[in-house]
Image (cartoon, rainbow, N blue to C red; front, side, top):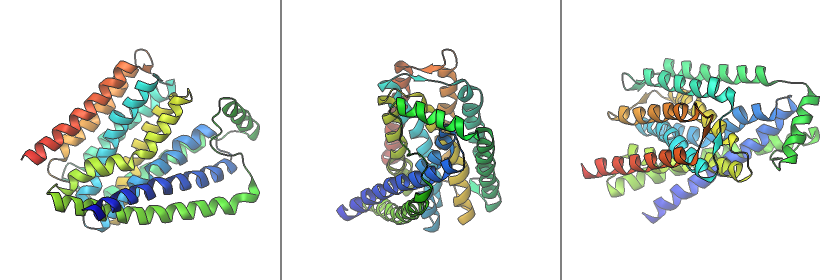
Length: 326
């Protein structure tokens, strides 16, 4: 049991570290292509913080644990809204940009509904996986096209970031391209090894204590793979840029549903557990709640944040009470 716990903890650490290396290398290269920092955040960084979920879900899929692959995505999206956004709003109220309220958040709800349609027969086929994967390609392309600006505007935006202490990604240095490519390779390698350790540790723990593997994936693995989002949101809130948190959560949820489910289904068709709809409805409900509570005043206050966090904790308690009690 101790070895399995060490495997799980070590695997999650590699997933988090690997995603950090992947984000740094990819974001630098993306900046060389003339992308705005905001666009890098909602595409490259969102993909990087979703990379642990992608690696873990592919690992589950290859290990013939496709139920855990699906519950990992659903559980991570629930944790992103209930736990991460809730904790961030408790630290500092989260302002909601007009573009997020009118476009990105409704898109997250719509994509969640699309993912639900693929689960009607409790399966995600390779064809459905291809459709989801095509969706993330279209999302990234559209965001890139909308966010591409002239170099002078990029330098102006970078200057404003540095004034607020948000120079998280170094300015472009063409001579260090190979170093950033090396970071990408190292990050991908860490994600690959980490995913295998997470799958091995989670399955061993589930077998030893009699917990269904899908439940371990829905909670423990989902929380562990959501650590990059948690870290990014907490740092943003402490620096007075809590509006970044909502964009990070929305972007990560979109990437989870389209790229993680899509690519995992392309690797191997996925089967969903019979009770997946209970968790899917929770995911959809929290997504809609974000729209409702942020709409009138265009902010998510501490009261709403505490409500989201309480809802997540009650959900986890009820899920474990039901599964272990039964």
